[in-house]
Length: 234
Image (cartoon, rainbow, N blue to C red):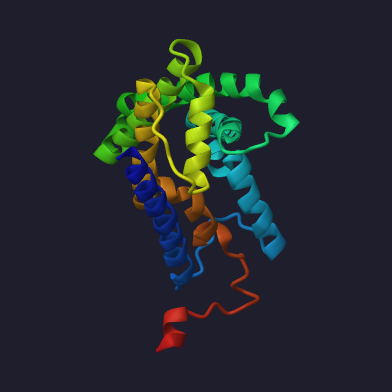
């Protein structure tokens, strides 16, 4: 049963993510609306998108505390995901041995960053006013995934060999044997829930940032006429 759920979740994530990217790609930008000050050439746009993705430039300018919590969470999550590759790669490159400790520390930092972002939604009046149920639910889900992962790291150690065998079978479509560890099953189910809701939630800012006209447009309205794609279609 868990195998069926796992494959359905994987299929939903892949197709849903691809469909959302396709809709972003096809959506016309009828207006020239880069957020100023904006780059005046394409290489500047590339640099702007890079700094937005790598350093959360706009968030840093807007609110330093929110930037700190958000950046801590995202940077730690990236390290945690890299460390989790050890469950999906065989044989494992030697370089993975050097990031194990960093990955464990990143797990603690990720949960800390998520806790900060959740408290901020309750604590800051303006943020609480614009927060929806989905905003809280996603943070709670991510926290549950992080905490259950930390419990397996520090308290209830599961059979790593059994788990890696199951994960390799899952991603290579060679069969999925459900591990016996109950905490891992809970952790894995929470991840599957996240994969299902990912394409239909605000988490799609992962891909959507590259299609935002306020970020990916060149500020050159005086040099080049912007033609509304809808007008061309007519």
